[in-house]
Length: 344
Image (tube, rainbow, N blue to C red):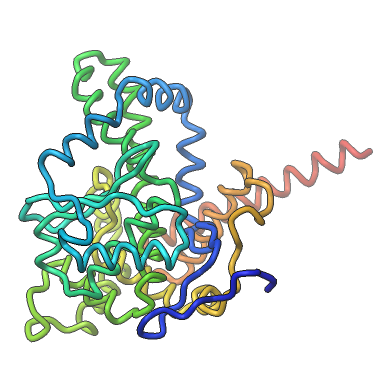
């Protein structure tokens, strides 16, 4: 590893990652879902048009007028945590952050040219300091990965969709783009969970935060091993009807289910990929290979899905995997035969 900026120790033995590229921690399914979005007919034109229909000034002014902007004198602990996460992931500038009054624990990042972070009071009151570090690091990861622009477009598209729902053709066209965006954003959440873990570097603290977000109230009332058992039960359903229900129930969601996120992140925390990043072995911004093609992204996602299915007991997943393998094998034989004939 050759980098002029060595890893810099942070408080509590945390390290920062100079020049880290989001590709270092990006979930392969995030890449694949974005590739699918790019493949939706007319999707690029719709997004470009919608981006030009609104100014992000309104969104920023709304936050400025109705929320508390975090700074050295307002929520100083959150200010410090935000700056720590920005230093950890080596962002060039710190995004503005606001706290908004709302009982539901939530955080989001919006904006196209100047993304900013919003935390609800429900989140700030629910999590301890290390849980908030993870949550803020998650949002900073959205900024580094440039997810905020796509999320902003998704919000605007949902507004536009409700306005043109009476036009059948227009509604159907928008629905295809919105559905692809929703699928991508669920996968982008898995990427940003990894960014949050890199900021925290404490998998146990991260898991506690995710448990609280799922419904925990105090450590006396919850049990982490039992919660992870829930995740295994969810992943290992033995009835195809349950498999279909899982697909249907998640279709309209912007975030993956809590147990899915917890299980996915704990697996990554135990991986050699995570340990390599902590040791300083990761791709740097500006020193990466040329941007991958649509096919590269799809292949990467396919490998991720294949590995997930291989370790899954979900009956529908296994059936689809077997069918996919059969189709892939038949296609390979046909392609091989055609290629041989072409050479002759």
